[in-house]
Image 1 (cartoon, rainbow, N blue to C red):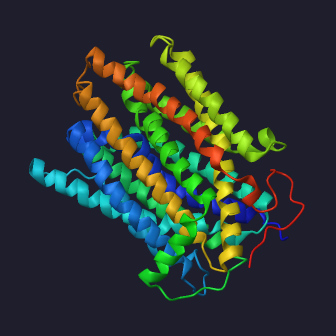
Image 2 (cartoon, rainbow, N blue to C red):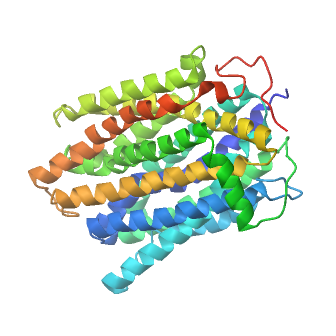
Amino acid sequence: MKKLRFKEKIGYGLGDGASNIIWQTIMLFMAYFYTDIYGLSAFHMGTMFLVVRVFDAFADVYAGYLADHTKTKHGQFRPYLLWFALPFGIFGALTFYTPDVGETGKIIYAYVSYTVLSLFYSLVNVPYCAMINNLSQDPDERVSMQSYRFAFAALGGIVVSAVALPLTKVLGNGDLQKGYFYGMILMGALSTLLFLVCFAMTKEHYIKEVDKKQKLSGLYKELHILLKDQNWRCIFSLNVVNLIAGILKTGGAMYFVNYYLHRPDLVSVILSIILGAKFIGSMFTISLYGKLDRLFAYKLAMTVQAGVMMMLFFVPSQYIVSICIIIGVIHFINSTATPLQWSLLSDIIDNLEKKSNKSLSGLVFSTNIFAIKIGIAIGGAIIGWLLTMGGYIGNAPVQTESATLVVRLIFTVIPAVLLLSLILILKKYRTHENTENMMIGVADSEPARH
């Protein structure tokens, strides 16, 4: 099996760096931006997250189906990076623009801009994710590429956390609404550039035969193939729950730092710790779990991470250094496990394509991104609704005890319980239905592909 060059792995990784310059901004800042900068109520923010992301999640599925039935001189999935990198970058900025159009107008603008951004994200990110199976047939190489991918994803987030907030203050000259918009113009431009570099540095070496017919009846038939597969159903469910937990522990960070630690000056520091830990952790996947079964390793990581998160709930707010270390440990553990989870999708694709004789990479990845967005939608709504129940008031200098307690629960205990539930979900995953290799670092036989 052909080994990928270092250049190609770097190029592939840059694609998720491009995505995460916008994506991590959404994960880390968007809830806070809408409630404390843009001026939406927590209830409107939470409801919008749910409505827009559920709608967008269905767009993901069709984007994957379109990509599976695409064939151009540039490949099957790569062309989408070329076609949609610029629109994605433009709407990454426009979504963080605050128009002076009154309360109703602002609500409408928020819904429209966020929906369009999400649609362009689907059209660029779904094909990017699916591209990995066309880059290599080697399970080891795929795990390695996933590690590069999530390392650069974290780097994209580090750029956002370390640069974006200071930029909002400098560029806005005291006006945070303008500062966020001007800052995101620069972030959007960088995202577009990195997607184009990713396109230039990668090549699809294994392109399957593509049926270019795109009919809804064909989509339904291919979805039926996925729905019948127990492993696909298992990972789909896992992604929904995992991303509910993920949006709570990242989207809740701004609230935790501002209203439990009472140290708004540490927001950039904490976010950099989170993303720095993710960068380092993603590079340790193979060295930590190389001799372990992937499912066992993933369950172990989730168990340890949940325990550490529950411990964080009981740490007093004045123990800043300890809190920073614990947060770093949580996200380090999580990021070591993420490439394991995504590598299982490639196994599922190999198995389904062998049985069905169809190109299903785009659809498998898009349906799981669908699951991710459903999880984010629910998680974002939960943040808004729980804050409302706790009596949270946006941009208030001090919150009530009930609001502060809710902020702490959102950031620690609730996502910890959700992570433990992932272990129960994985009990239904059938390891014998995977392709031959189930150990990282062991590739005795080539996975079956047509």
